[in-house]
Image: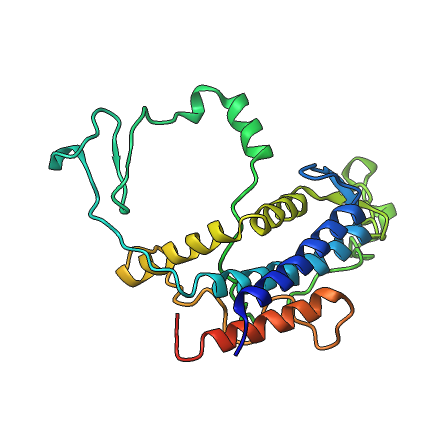
Length: 256
């Protein structure tokens, strides 16, 4: 008999420790954003962050397995429900009252808010890509630019030399805004496991009623979880393996 609260708390503490280590590794304080990071550091943090996100999704699935959500009829002023000007009917039965937002009225504020907004933690695994077409990227520049001799082309008709593509190095500064957002989103979700479980329960209820826009039926993708590695090189690999086994045990006989 599995002690589910103890198993969830043990893996949750391990993920908290791993996320705190990632913040220290990236040189960030809690909730701090970094514009750029060295390429090697950004790639190393991403290799640990991806399986940590997948492991926490499985903890959310386990925590939400016994939650039941009941949806009410959508309320609207036309049906005699409270509302008024600016009321918007919601599928959950709640009514949002207030003037409609207009981001174009203050573009500077809207752009600043979009730059610093932290998205909600994604509860669905990213789908696998079944693209068998090989992508080829040229690593060199063409050396033959003309079939005629250079001396036969007038100076004013000659094309300038194509600048060589810079070779990426491990120390190149790369954009780390998306990485920092994912780190902060995961940290906030770890501190609010019950809220994430309720979010997933709402998603399942909407799925059963056919209200979801996404055609996804299962929050987990088939096969191995994202970030899975055969050979573990970090503690997060063991945590992901255990969380995936736990969610499979919890879902036996339950296709949701």
